Length: 294
Image 1 (cartoon, rainbow, N blue to C red):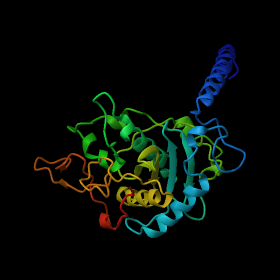
Image 2 (image 1 turned 90 degrees about the vertical axis):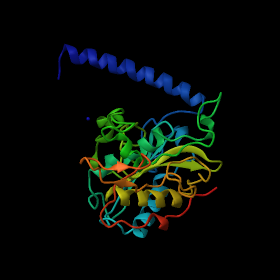
Image 3 (image 1 turned 90 degrees about the horizontal axis):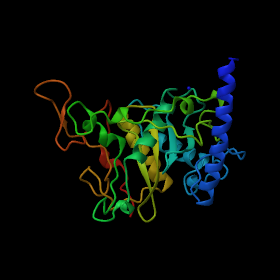
Image 4 (image 1 turned 120 degrees about the horizontal axis):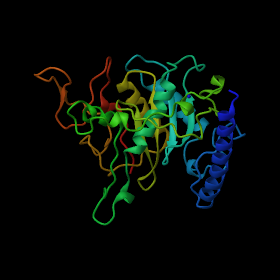
């Protein structure tokens, strides 16, 4: 997140970039794939002309789903939560919080929720990925919880968490008073970031088509996952029965996996399947989470 000769040059460059952006945005709009251009005036947080957020939850949809899910899930620390929805391009479409105001949750969890949404979207697929003998015939849904063990030292994805840095300018842009509202300044931007503990899930519409992701943060990473799961179900964007996953449970394909045992050599525990996540304080059984829909 000076007045000098250099500043004038930067101004010219900025105007040139702005003009190029406007041109490219127009071209994308003609293709029906325009990215967010900023906040709308309707207070819903959906950027005007942002076709990629079409069909995704609005601010009010996310707020309602998050409030309901947070109330239903009392595991972990039983905290209030932040939630974020991104589209398939990683553009933030909505940001919301549960609780009475934006100070009722951990402030740091706003950016983390967005990071989780970006991660789940970035590393999940649907069947459209399959062509010419490559890709995933049934798609592959990976939650952020599924990435924990693979990114540990010696894991198959070690270093992944450093591969897509957060755009701090987008994450911390003000005014802060708009955080978690329909006009959150993060809306319409690409937040970036890779998060590797529970709370991020891809969103699958009817037909098992991936359209983006939701990220939730504010409690233990396990509770974040449980609440994100309930948020996705409340939004009706959990149509992934038959989509590939790593949990071993077709009814919960991208569910958190608790298969980590102590490492006899010390250090990070060992996940039997390679996609395990540590237990958290005051866990609840994952069997209480609703199954995904066809």
